[in-house]
Length: 125
Image (cartoon, rainbow, N blue to C red; front, side, top):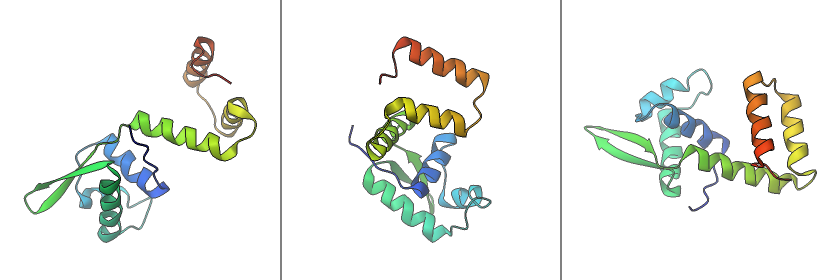
């Protein structure tokens, strides 16, 4: 799959679409109202960029466009993780996981999941 880099704003839109699809521009503006002050024009411009990148598709439903994600959430997260590791280039995955664990409060379930991944060798240093 072709790598698609997402900006922080594009991540917000993609997370909305992954969570509940399809959505119109108006529905996205409303859903983001507490988090952003984006206008319909701003959201539309960002969606056009996401279409050009191949991350979303639009279908016309009457007088409005309805948007669906094309980019798989798991693939996007993997790409973002790879990009992050390339950017920091130091300390390896162990330092990254350790820092993330210290900065956020992990639930017992998340700790167990991380432990199982490490034990199975899913995360290699």
